[in-house]
Image (cartoon, rainbow, N blue to C red; front, top):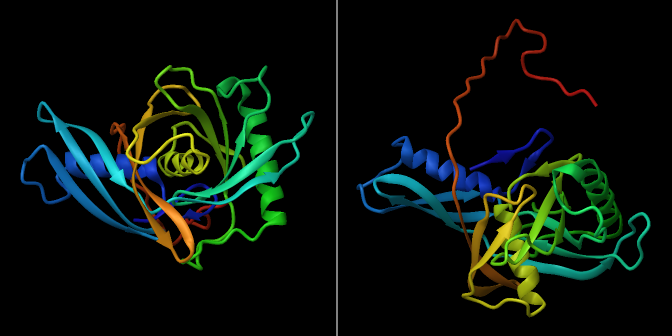
Length: 259
């Protein structure tokens, strides 16, 4: 299973795994004995990922996937943001590397109305971390560098742990809570003693809807690096189908990028 955005390939995508798993089962693309849960095993650049697709009343209803181990690489790394002091980032992995920053602008909460600000500052944090740190997975040398900044704040729902937005590539915003993002956020909170193993949490994304359920079901070691084993549950809907055609006589048929 390979994932890419408009800029580059990425090691893992959690909300994409949820969507792909549900689409595969609902479209008869995997072996299915008709039971309440269908299991799918994926290979990804970040490691093996297993999803379970559940049915309710005969309809595909949700996916829960067990992700690759998540861990915190560094804590309290100083970053600079306009008009505020003492801002720090935790560097964490949940299938991708993230810089995690508590959102410091209380008068401009995380939401679509502040999308441009979130985008610009997310790129700023990412560039600072990549300039000062060699972000490297402890056992997978092909996984290095930081491509995501996560800003988080207190949640809107009383039963959620947090609300966040993930900023990636050239400033794109993830509207979902994030599958790899929820994985690494649980590792961040667990490392600071805010949650424990076998404790279910809910995460909110940019829009405040479509929450995910996460849980850390164990711990492991990646070389000398302690890590936790996350699961994430969510849902998705098929919204359409697309087909792309390549014509050898088309001079721009393989695409182009304008910056």
